[in-house]
Length: 584
Ligand code: ARG
Image (cartoon, rainbow, N blue to C red):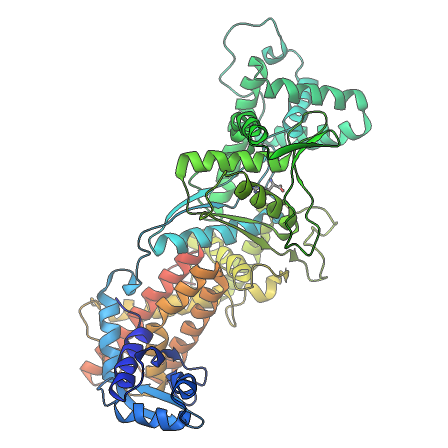
């Protein structure tokens, strides 16, 4: 269905035509002066030049043609604005249509686009830490929003499972268990199906091996050798690698799921490995890959550049492939598997130059089509209250699990005071609220900016927070429970008060805000919408008595309106990636 603002534009266009002006001037926008009007049109100002007339004269001409039932008031205001207010009946009829439409009438992307979202980047054999939070939270919201508008979305975790780190882990395992068959070159039997380590062991092995390689050159050389053999596909190492991946992925999956983050694809950097050499051979043959100081590079500087863009290095002088090489080969693979219209990378903004080089190389060498959209969404850092990157109390890197547990504890204390949650629901409810607090706290900021994680503020039930949204939902839910009947059949009523109309207007603007958030990859726009909606709902709720309202039709109208608000809020938080408890 059409957005309300577009329906109003249509009426305006007809009025411009009827008044003898071109229809193209009749574009309506949501008012930026809600104290004066609900919608406005600035077309008379633009038309003034073309028709060599005073804008207010044009606005007056148009207003004279606007006698539609949609408008409660239309005003031409100096120097030439047209200010509009809707009739409650028209607004109500529109909402009623939205209420029964699928997805509240949000138009679908036609034709649907195929979008790969690359938003994990965790490293195998290492626990998730707070640095992994932002890509997961932002990426998941973007995937859900894109799906909602009808696009085909493939969310890829793109694990760091390639290069020296794998060699280090292999050598670390060998140190502990030298007798395992994986290290016996003469072994030809089947390898055990059971992994020789648990996730906790693996998480010890890797950092220890990494630290040791920095001070022990012999160990470091062995790790390099193991990396090389792994990439050559040596049988025992491949089997060990399989175990490392399985154990690690099972743990990562569990942790991402606790965050309500669900990937479509569990690929890693190493999956691109088979594509590397053919890609490089082709780049050489096409003359794009050239030698430079012993390395193999693609020049990506162009004449329009005002800054220096260093060449993209494919192979180092020792023949080793680099981070950019795997990202390019991954694009080759994605092009082959999905032929995406868009690839969106949700990665730390400090990697901007890397992606600039990768994108330029991909377009230049024809890995992607010119019309493929490659987009880098570089997010800022989550800081502690001291303004520095978030750390544990003793200055270490905080595990994501512990971080979530801390927030859950804070929430548990808050809700324990309210004494409404039955003990058996306590853990789940606290977790649900904690996830809302941390996700909303993150998403309500512009992704590209740094922000301060403030546990007190983010978990508060008041103010611009996730728990506030949940609280609004729960509160409306409890009215519905008290009412007890089926509200879906009750009719909305034209608004009778300013606060009621306000709430209806906000509801009617869902599609506008969602589509904006999708277009610009800005979940913060959807957050702002949720906050506005919850605010309007609470003001209305405080203004009227719902269940005690004596007029039955009016009471039903209130219930229908609040129920629609609740469903809308539930939809919004689901798009943002969290859910609401029944009580809190
Ligand atoms: N694993 C990488 C890191 O820790 C992030 C990966 C981001 N995605 C990508 N396609 N490069 O920095």
